Structures are given as structure tokens and as C-alpha cells.
Length: 330
Image (cartoon, rainbow, N blue to C red; front, side, top):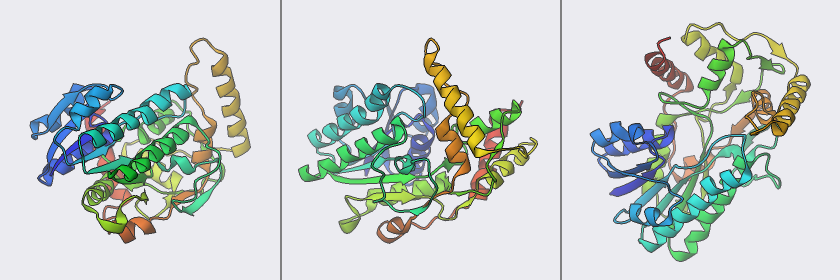
């Protein structure tokens, strides 16, 4: 099977492209940073650089491939809606159109459980429990992108969407690096009582799920799937596990939720008034995510994709710590 992996210069896309090569697939990769895919090219991947906002480039990328794993997109909690819409919705529309024009058989779309998040606690949330109002631009545009993907079924494209929660392991550049930097600056505090349980996903388990989505058939098609390790853990236990693994002091200072949320609101408001609208150091969304329970029901993935997460969170965190120390010796 020959596949295209978009966003391969990023963490998830890059790790899956490598995994697909190890499984014997022919892999074409796309990304904006050539240096981010050098390791894939050395392993035999074909690299085509460029911006997926270019519809013609998307069509060229989809030529002569059987399936596309679409991992490209914008991630974050700050910025203009137009920018998130362009990176998450319009780019996905280009990929969908390219798949249809080039007669690609299947599109596996990497979505996000951020679409569920509304500032409240959620335990074992199911795929159909999408809120009526989205908390931020990222969640809204990821959901709109999903709708574009599922809309292509009527034209014969086989589609699946995966919503992995807090993916970590070697190469994670988004979850723990921010927390590590905050702790080094003395800015990290446990929000609320510190007992909130959340889901994580080992990148190895996500690779298995994405690969299963490439091979799935029949009733598995046309569905969205929650993906996680299936074992929620106290968030601050995981954070302190990483800090100890890196030789940093564990976080022990507590901050009341209402105080932290109010400070974040003031911080965001001030940044909106400043020239250039700089990114705040504290977000309401981030405060809520660090204080609330948030876990997924992965029963659908177990049933239709035979998904069975094998790699524990602690193994994934050990892998992350080893990688971090190798790349950040200071």
C-alpha cells in the first residue's frame, strides 16, 4: 500500500510515517520543514515540501496513493479564527477534494477531543457528545474539518476520523515542554485540589490505531473514534512523574481554581489590547484543562478497530524523559 502522510514534520505525523515505513508501506510525506522529515527520507520516504493551502499541491500529493493520513493542521489556544479556519478547515477541504479527484480510496483524518471541551468536567465522554457551543477556535475548526471529511462519503471516499487525547512519548513538543518551562520559571501551580483525572495516549498506541484505520472495513468506516490509553490518571501525578524524571522539583504549590481562572481572564484581556495581541502566559482554557476531569470512552475503537492500547502512560513518559534529556542536555 502506498500512502500519503500530511504534517509529517510534526510529532504525530512524523511518528506515524516512521511506523508505516517500518510496517513495509510505501510512504509519501508532506511538511513545511525539510529538516523535520530528514529521518523519514533516510528510511525511504518520498518527501514533497509545500503548503497544503495550495490546492494544486494537494492534488499532486494525492496522485498515485491509495490512502491519506491527514495529520496537518494548526494547534493552539490563541490566535485569530481566520488562521485556525485556514489551517484546519480549508486545508482539509483541499485534501478531500484532492482525494476525490485523484481517486484515493481512503482518508484517515486526525481530529481532536478538544471539540468536546466546554470548561466542564467530563468522564468517559462518547463520540456523539459534541457540545452545541465550542470553547475555542481550535475545537470549532477541528469539528468543522471533520464534517468536511464525512461529507465526502457520498462521493465514494472511505473516511474515518480519530480523536486522540494528549498524545505523548519521544518527540512530544506540546504537552510537557510547556509545563517544564513553567516549572523552571517558578510559574507552575496545581490548580484546584489536584485530584482531577485525565486521559493520555502513548504515541505507540495512536500509531496502532491509525494503522488499524487504514485497514478497517465495513461498519468501521464513516465513524469518529475516541483514542486514549483507556486508563485515566491524576494529571498532577503524571506531571510530577515527568519533573522527577528530569531531575526537577515536583510541583506542590496550590492555586484556587477561581483565582487562577480570573487571573487568566485578565491576562487574556490585557493581551487583546496590546499591540500585536501577544500570546498570554495564562489561558482560561489551560486553567480549566489543568483542573477538570477529562476522559474518553474508547469502546467504539475497541469494537470496530480492535484497538487495544498496549503501551502504558508511564512507559510513554519514560520515553519522553529520555528523549528530552538527549535533546535538552542543559
